[in-house]
Length: 387
Image (cartoon, rainbow, N blue to C red):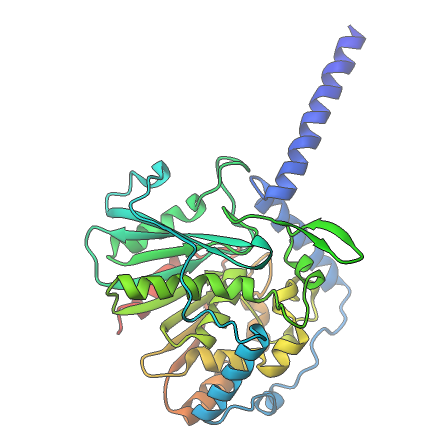
């Protein structure tokens, strides 16, 4: 009897341990709950130390911004392009590797406003790929929403069956409002692959973390391109084959960061909405706000810091950038911290000198989840419909 009990207990422990490994690697349920809980504990520990974290004087933020004219913006854009694509291998004229129309994905077959789904594949260095879906509504207002998922994108059906189902409700909301939706995952997330690469003198590794990218960075390859190229290249094809009146972009967390970078580089993006996506570097003393590899590349942000990227994303006729922060976000970039160091007016005042574009910051009050909430979606729809 005792032997059977011991065997059963051992079996249960092995199952729990194995599932824990799968949860951690593929970030499936209940990864997000456990991650949020862990971050809340860490944040409480940091706060309990009662030591100062941020030393920047808000009155000196203007001194960090070197943009005063359209020429300044164009110069920074050129320098950023030269950094990301050092061999002048720009993506603005490239096309996706594969393109399929009217694909079948039963996860979305019950959306009444959906006409069809098209899919795109972009392949890059080290066989890194990006798979995206274009959802077309039955009734279209001829406007495209690019939605970019964050680091925690996962499949509700398990690690071997990825899709964009996690954001099905958001996709359906925009389709119901007659918008087309083009959705992406971050490198190595969702349906995107995790290639195995050989690093000289270090051996073979799986690129299953963005922090691994620093190991393959070189004079000729800047891995930050993996985050940017898929959207630009896919838009090239869409612009050629569809007649959308405008491209607009939304992103959560790492997808919010991606939204800012792409809209700073690509003027085709008219309105941009970054949700819990970034703070200026001086607000990142807390490790929960520091960000992965792509958020803190010294050479990149010396060319254009976050304040300048916000301006570049906002600048232009009919262009707008809104930063959304969840007030008590358990992950990062909380609205509660922003309210202690509000930089909105500084960006707006510099934008007034440029005379084109809009910038705003909106706090989702009392929101304690790392999400794109119904409140945020409503605010985005109001902004989009104000064109």
